[in-house]
Amino acid sequence: MHHFDYQAGELCCEQVPLRVIAEATGTPCYVYSHATLRRHYRVFDEALGDLRHLICFSAKANSNGAVLAALGRLGAGVDIVSGGELERALRAGIPAHKIVFSGVGKQAGEVAQALSAEILLLNVESEAELELIAGVAATLRRRAPVALRVNPDVDPQTHPYIATGLRESKFGIPIADARRVYERALALPQLDVCGLDCHIGSQLTSVQPLVDSLGALVELIDVLRARGVHLRYLDIGGGLGIRYADESPPTPDEYGAAVRALLRRLAAPELTVICEPGRVIVGNAGVLLTRVVYYKDSGHKRFLIVDAAMNDLLRPSLYGAFHEIKLAALADGANRPHGPVDVVGPICESGDFLAKDRDLPAVEPGALLAIMSAGAYGFSMASSYNSRPRPAEVMVDAEAWAVVRERETVDDLMRGERLPPWLR
Ligand SMILES: *Cc1c(COP(=O)(O)O)cnc(C)c1O
Image 1 (cartoon, rainbow, N blue to C red):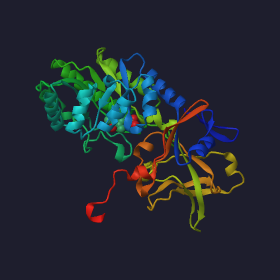
Image 2 (spheres, rainbow, N blue to C red; image 1 turned 120 degrees about the vertical axis):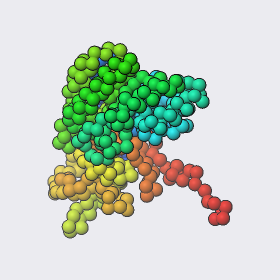
Image 3 (cartoon, helix red, strand yellow; image 1 turned 90 degrees about the horizontal axis):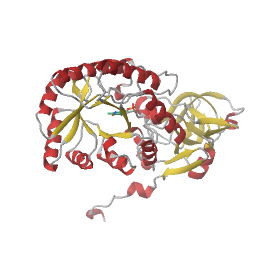
């Protein structure tokens, strides 16, 4: 469910025609729907029912301050993977006690930053990291709240680049070693060993891998309990998929029901369940607006060359991902021959495409297109490759809209560059 619909032939975000935003801000431009964000958060929250839970939105899916603030208002916490994301979450007003820190390569400075801010939990991904955190905590004279991120060796059946719960992936502590690593953690007085964590991958389109991994976690919690270790947090990660094309991912309700069923078996009302959804909250809440620059027919292939590129939206190039593309004005496609076109950007790479062999009308230069489902891993993965300033970001709320990040400028791109003395 999202709030991007045609009204009188114009594609609107809530009550605002996308044309209006594109005319005012230029293109390419990301547009987020506040109503969609609210709805997705509420549906997810309600799906967990009376389970004691905390939803920590995965900031890497979309770390725009307005998006974080909007979710924060609804009660969301944030899952961060860097010191930069910690700063963003705090500045967006997310309380530190709702922030969890994941990631395989946390550095001492980032750990110190997190401990000083008094975040809820550090999800630890290796024994070496455990020792590093204990050392930093000792220096700061603090106790570090930690969960072990285990790797359950479950195939999430998703794109290999976003599968994280397989034995051969770099993430987490092998579940077979978890007991031993818990013993080590418990022996370090600087650590408050309070949680268990797992995140098996992204864009999951079935609950089964989640159920399998959660089953393994529940067993581990039982084993730890028998040893007298009573955890307070069970972080089950994120990963719930969305519909980009014809996928039918589980609904939040199906997901919530599966989680609740497994946890009922555990009968641990003192346990708070943490979820780290990213894509399912923000993916369909955003689009990327782009204008056609040229229509090109090479005789072998037809191209729409647009002003957005792989630097703005990397997912098609990186994962071969599919994003639906819609005309902002239906009239642009009227009476035009339809057929397979590649929608490509101006970047000097053949891997620079937004869609391949897509059935779209041969629209004129200037036509406005909306690349759908671009709210997650869109702007947050954008770069300035080819010295292309990153796009503006806009948020819509009913009839109102506001720029929530200005378009970058070429000056922004060159800030900090200087000639060495021998070239001056
Ligand atoms: C990326 C990530 C998430 C969010 O994944 P989604 O598929 O966007 O829900 C959650 N937890 C961790 C540790 C992650 O790395």
